[in-house]
Length: 341
Image (tube, rainbow, N blue to C red; front, side):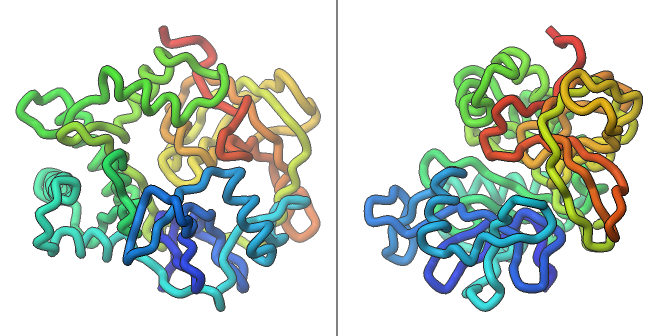
């Protein structure tokens, strides 16, 4: 099976991990712990209660219970998290899970919204059901009353169709798809922004033009991209070496992978505002969904993150600026050079 971002892995001891990379070492699948069995958890499946863990809780749990799930791979002096292949109990496909929901006769309002969303993208954007899926809590059947719909579109052209369709339907008063508004904005903002890098008003402006997040009959949904295998860049194994904090001003030269995981922005005319002036940033990579699709071609931006040296065959081949070195992304951001408001 081709294991891609948005898939989930269940381990032999019942842990659920979200796959977050197209590329994996020979021994593990790169993935992040999301749900752990917990006697006082607020989610349940097959009589077992589960708790969703944040970034710090995930690392602490793995350090204590599965230290072999943290290992050295392609980032110098940083442990990667992943599941050893021999510990895998089940690999869960977003496509298969969506098919189960569509074919289920379960009279469930949450499932009805997922069925409706998939039918809209199929009937109005022409996207095959084989190129759509669900991830997050829904993929492992651990959703609760507060869950969002993490909807996956496979293939870049399909994802563009979905984004374009939603951008049109969100202003149609007869459509079940709607713009985020009111208290929903504060709810999303509090989840995504953990510092003072962006005001609530700025966040609303950026999110509104990204067109990858909305409401369906009062439930939040996100339109996520996973590339088809033939769209994924093949490359020799590289070593990524973090070399320090950096803040830059630059222009976006290519945004075609800005909705991917990680979101990738090629840049030009780079000026270093803080950090090492002797390096030239080629790309900005965001590992947090907050900055997916946030800026576009030819826009002048400010970005703050961690500079990373890319090494192949013992030679430096480029430099990236990394956003999202932690899940909370404190003081790591991408935004327009001048406030849009």
